[in-house]
Length: 234
Image 1 (cartoon, rainbow, N blue to C red):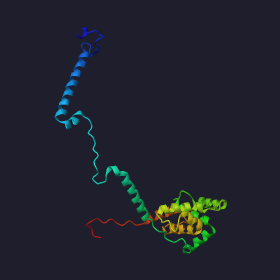
Image 2: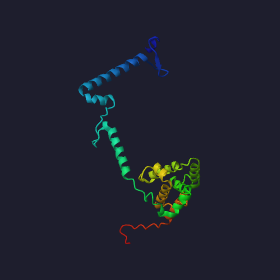
Image 3: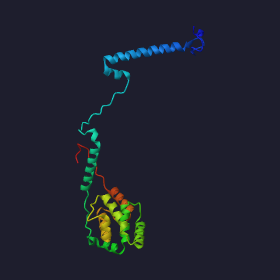
Image 4: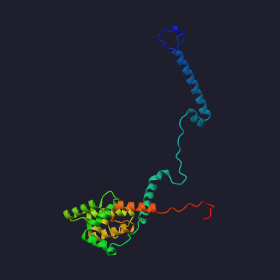
């Protein structure tokens, strides 16, 4: 029967050597199946509108509900701004004072004399500790001397390390700004920074790597207390 249909009205799909399947018949069956499915969907939509969304397979609409914490979603920028301000206030409150005053130079008279005669030495030692060994004392000291000889304003270079040191140890900006302290009292500022690092356990004469080796040896020599299990008598 299929072989009697003219080719211009029908194209056949070859299933095997003995059977063939007519395209119009296949299209008609597919159209009837789609019509039945559409009729079922419309019937279910009229009976249960909420079930229609589930049947049709469309994704459910996400409802934006307020968080249980009571923070509205629309005002997220406001709360993020408030949290940033709170963190800034906490950081300001947690800053600690310097261990010694700006004018306490004679508390370490040896360093006071070295700084007075050769400030490049004191600055190089401070810069090596603040840079955590990424730069050496000799390089920083030579650069400090070069800037002092060419421009006469080595304080513009040393005040940068005071700011960096204050950020590392959360020190207060006292008695005034870092640049102003170094411009007005360069030697006193270097002595204060030297004493601060010394108070924090650094031996500036051996450099950063020497201090790290010293601390590693101290940790290795520290005896480990024995672990006493519960129920055992000491």
